[in-house]
Image 1 (tube, rainbow, N blue to C red):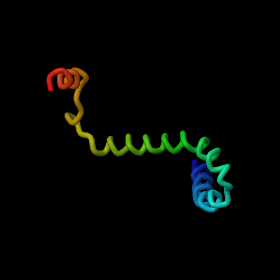
Image 2 (cartoon, one colour):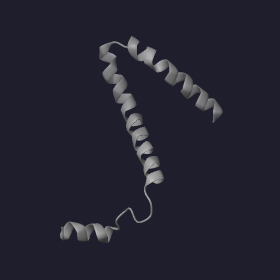
Image 3 (cartoon, rainbow, N blue to C red):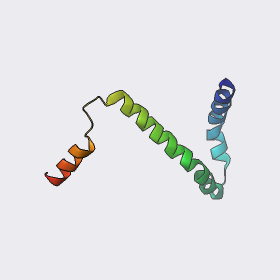
Length: 72
């Protein structure tokens, strides 16, 4: 895993320079490739944050949510 971590760190360090060198036409293609990774990382971060901040009792059960929707 350390080998992969090192490769990713080198890649992310080089990304700003690589992006600046891309022609405008290639930016759209690059975004199509990177978009799923971007969204996956965003959701992973949100899930990790929620695990740190949400406590038992902070979340409604399905039945409680349905009751709130039916009787506001």
